[in-house]
Image (cartoon, rainbow, N blue to C red; front, side):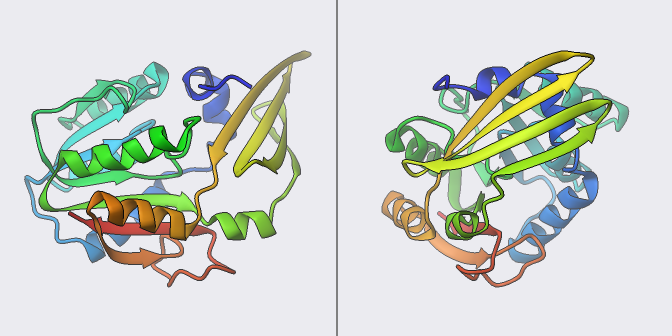
Length: 245
């Protein structure tokens, strides 16, 4: 597997097809949870780390926030920019690896949503992303990290799935090895086969809380899904940490 698999995979049309179930309704629930638990005011500077196709950035801009949205995928950024233009929204889109992103602005709110964390090979690189969020925040600013609940995933791993999307047959093969969840995605369309891979470090809640507090964050609130349910190690599919600088 390529160590930086995300550079190619997130820049393909196939990625959008596989993850098309991530819709606007989901994004609205995510933003609603954040607004219900973080004091956000019009004009606040918000950073969407790994913004993808911009669903959250668009909603934030509609609420009157000053949004900077960063992503490595030119394809996803292009879609986000087109949507913002159609909605007559001003969003500062930045094409960058989050490791290389720099800003003279300090943000009131930083978001890292939909498991946009844990992609890198080493723990040091991954934790550096959390450090960057801290460094880019204003004092008393908030950081929201949305990650999967590693314990729940281990106990409920579906190793193989098959579905048909847009005239393509998509097989996904998942396994856990060396504290990483890996996925092989095989797409068959018009007689042609394309193969992609994903690999994400499976940080536990304790590991993330330890890393965040060591950096200097206070853990403000913890949820087990974007409906705001209390986190439960055994049953929560997600781990959502709202942290304060």
